[in-house]
Image (cartoon, rainbow, N blue to C red):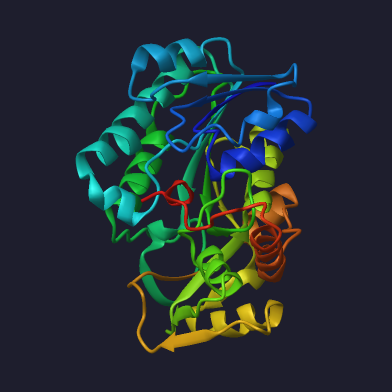
Length: 321
């Protein structure tokens, strides 16, 4: 297919675009490049790749990019609570208003597939419940609230014939990618340990599902490859039952991969989110099974810091906020 990836120069997009190209798709990345173009530079020589620098709030630019595409993957957003809380108005403009405009433009111009990137943090705080795609959403942050709002409107819009919307709710991402992020829990802990600092772990009973960035990217590729009737109008949690973890277990996960790590345990939870998620649907429908586990992500990040591939893991460009 001809695939447009809005926000494709970011953390997930940098891992996804090579997979899309390898699957035979022609890929156009539309991104404002606020974190640079490092994720796209290795792809510039590929005849099936194109980069457009633009702002998804500009409906003219978005409409022009969407026209003649067969599939749209929408990754673009202000991501994470700190980034969203810093500028609530900009968050609403990008994560809700611009997002819905992109959906409507795609439907109008005859795009066949549209995958919206959502988050398992929409589940909020729901203790002692194994959450499926049908479970109620209880967002407790602006970021999750807007994701949930888009989900509801996205699937309730009138659908032109041949338009197939899908929602992927991603678990908490970790692992090495071309545009790195060090504001995610496994990545932060690994950076601190690999840099010789003490990794501070906020111990608590809360559950959080994890998924490697390359596995998350592969879920999008599998969704595009699936017959339309299997994914049209569907929501899929992206992750695996085995990688639901509690904060209190993060120390043992880190020490398993890095026995030398210095760890400080702080006996208080970092936030109120608490969700134990079921990933049976994506496994049974799309055959999705993660190829990585947290120790893989920890090892690859540690090696990238040690060998200088990431020269300064504290560089601000590796944080969304």
